[in-house]
Length: 256
Image (cartoon, rainbow, N blue to C red; front, side, top):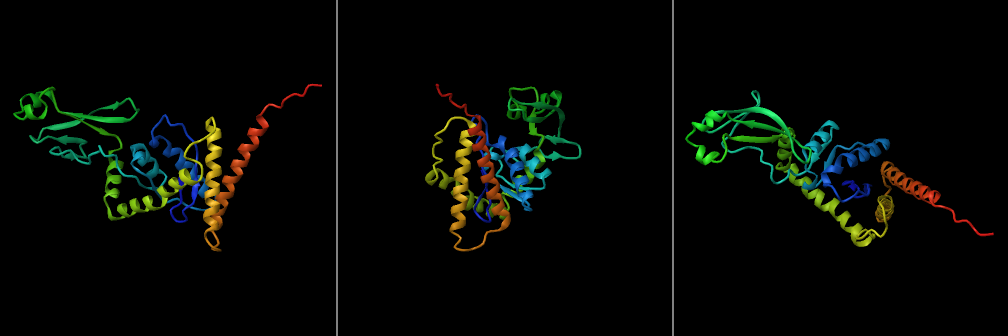
């Protein structure tokens, strides 16, 4: 689900299976929202999401689309490794004893994430007096970093900036209450239909009802034509799905 922070309306909603992480769906949602807004002559410049969408590939995707991502970096990420400064030009780390840990190879983990491996020469670690404290059970010191380390660093800097703190408050005060309203008052606490297509129709109708009620509460204030077109596009899409569903149902034969 995507919510416009300026108007507080739902700009996109869709049903997905719950067998994957939230971060896996950001690319698809981002493309759909950006294309819909572009059709209505609107530009998406910023994207706010919680830490569940933190992913190096997502940061890279948003930068390629010229969208500033305000997504908190996942808690396990560390921008620096204490005692091991990084040399960007040489693409290597230095240990406290000033021994190099150059880049050696790429590595793909079970999740499909591509990582970079750095490790020191075994002979350097073997003769090092700090080996019992540094790497007592391995031959040499190894460092593993994501290939999106630069994107993570930029996201980390945004997160801890003053604007980043304001963006977090904005997300918590505008986006999250919409989700709460849908589950509490618009029937999305539990989806009572089978299949992804059926769930999508239920969510789409709830979003349309929410947006229409939002505009009715404006008290005569005229909504922007672009946002109004977005609502009509969503309604048209829902009606198309319902029509296709009705047409696909088998027609019972009557006995003579």
